[in-house]
Image (tube, rainbow, N blue to C red; front, top):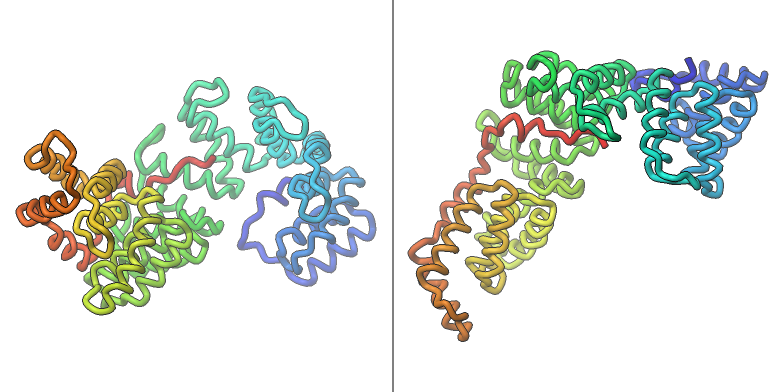
Length: 428
């Protein structure tokens, strides 16, 4: 079935002989060969990526009434990478592909109906109809989309976990990695199915094999915290490294934690900082926080430089909703370490940290609220110098900064709950 062009397995290898045969067949007006070649040129699989070649080959495939060729043409018009962007033309090509029983065309057209693109009026009911059509034609994304519809109860549909599970299973069987993860999560917590950690692990493994980085990270976490598997740090690291290589920021962050704190390993802070940095670059807030903490805690030398390095990392961490990042940034402003002391801003940061589920921030927030209740007059303190002195006096009685820093120095990995470790948002 031509739809397999869009449900491929990354482990499949296309050699030079197969490429040559496809080229010969395309020259003989074999539309399937032309369409498959066009997809290979888009992906750069077996050949160097070449969108111009993909455009010509897909145009020929579509002209020969092969739905996949029309869909590839539609993708090129939708993106505007090699032809002038035109969503109206893309819509027509996706419709043509769908009519020619290429399921991905139905899926792509469904998305355009949801967003009201290409001159279409948003029509969720039509979008759902197209998803069903695409899934019947064995398009994995369509089946996965239906799984999301029934998991959440969208588009006027009643939430139905049995249907969600069935559509996720079909999509996973068709190599849609996101649906494998969504199904794994259902088995992890026993939602709509009987809880089964072995099935969870196997589904994460399949998704990881399909090069979904977050799945590799989740699998690595299972091995590391002994959740349904024998604890195996080496296997955990292998999977987390693959996840990090596939640009999953959480995998990079977990590697940083392991290399800096695992009691079974010799600490490697250079490796830890490298993984934290990559995770932070990938906008993982906790990775930014832990990297910032490495500068913030170990500041016995080059104090000003290290604090200057820590502050923007902790600011980014807090902006990315990292509770621990907000907490450490709050510590900086509460103590006036490298910044002008600002108790009001520190309180705001601790409030954010508490909101982002950092328990230490909740404690700090309670302490500051108590400070205002006990020491601050009802009227605002007009004299900033006096306010600073009041804060210093208060800190002498209630300062837990050193305890926090010592805990940070150890970089202890707390055993996370299943909800924390394995919480992956259902595919949008």
